[in-house]
Image (cartoon, rainbow over all chains, first blue to last red; front, side, top):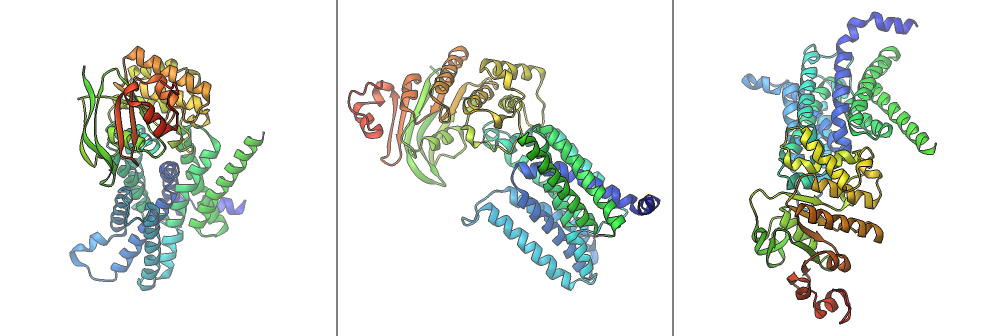
Length: 283
Length: 239
């Protein structure tokens, strides 16, 4: 009880990171439904790594005097631009010298992962900061994140509410959408861009590991729990939010790394969902 | 008579590599065309070119202004990971009348319900599409295709995953809808008996031998062609 009361007495410490974590969990849970249904989980892994690379590159460039362009090397800006460019590139769905799209995405994931570690060796902030980018810290967040992340999440959700019918249509049956003269490429790009921007801001605040886990595990868990598409989105938002908040809570009271704690919480929900599904099938 | 679709010296193929051509064809309103050919003969490539999924390597595919297609793809092409209901799947056919960013109106919903009724799947509207049998899926996809009030109904192997009874039910349904709504039908099938029973015009296609013939059943399904492409002896009585 002592630890729990200490947690609640420390409200002023976890208020901001809890908001950032909960909103990130919710919006990643929502967008992750597209990631899972379109079978592009590897795309989200690549985007989180590219976002990490943007943050690491920004830290690296901070070590130089960049003069007038210094505002362009802000982690938020650089991460968002690089991740969005990668999203546009992945949305092009072209064959590259007969290498599959999956292979190109794998290349993006690996080069970004390698570059983050190399930059980590060179930046003045040190390896500890790179570990935070990759695996998540979220113990404290920048005060601005409390406003930036909900604003970005709101923007993404509004776009997805307006174009919900269209995004589902192009995800489920792209061929017929093309026959009906829907702007298929624009819609596919819009889905990936919204994911990319959310990934960019959330990765900077929480780290790549929890963001990737929020994009993949809550939607997968929701698909175990319901056969209704709209309910999949609702449950995924709830599970994403719970994974983030409970992950933060356990991190606080057990003194364990926050990003890893969030990812493990999302994994526990996944296992519970799987068990529930198996039990339902057998009954 | 009005030509809804015209192919003028069209060569079909992939990535600018011609597979078969030049093809010339005129599809008039109210006709029922069956596209026949052995496996790998280019039937699907031709259909994709007509529908605009694939660009013609050369020549022109012309469609009349404002033409609306109702498309019944092969049900296997849908990823079963999607928990979409039959009602949601059929609604997508109506999207041809609803622009991107707009929602379905009450009138659109009426059309969707009527389509579900017409094809006998209204009672399945809350079931997931993936949980349906092969025949139920085809009827749901037919409902989807007609919910957009199309001019041309395009069917890609509509009876490939159903038994004989299911095949008859689906094809009779297609015939009834064509008759009631005055539709033009374009159907790809590798089942000779299905095409000869329901289509009044035939396209016989075989890219390997460079063969393309279109016209009435007796013109296209000659004893020579039946023997060459289907291994049937003269006087098989298929027509």
